[in-house]
Image 1 (cartoon, rainbow, N blue to C red):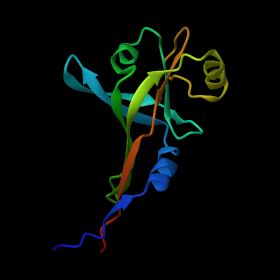
Image 2 (image 1 turned 90 degrees about the vertical axis):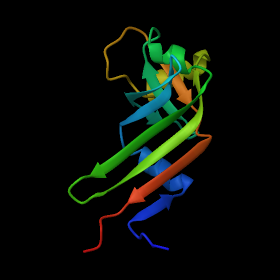
Image 3 (image 1 turned 120 degrees about the vertical axis):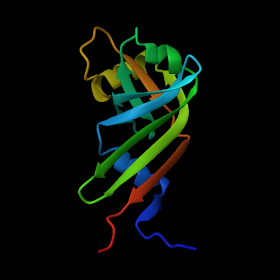
Length: 138
């Protein structure tokens, strides 16, 4: 069997540490029975859930509230052929608790899109997987 030292699986803690370093990821969900991927800015909450901030009229909110989704973020360097990718899988829910909404309005993510009002979506980190690709040995 071929040993590949360039590839390494990441544990949950290391995956979450890397995830916290980047500002943009992708939500993977189902739209009209077809797979859909949407880039979004995000942050990690203290309980390691992924937080999104979007418009209350967003198609994304209607599509993902209450369903299991995947969230992926990564960082790669094409010049060195190295990087990492982390996938969080879990149920997405709109934050409806007023105190929690207020806390996230102060400390949570802010949308990069101008909008009136904000809805926060929490993706529970029920399953976290990560992988790292190291530069090839010369």
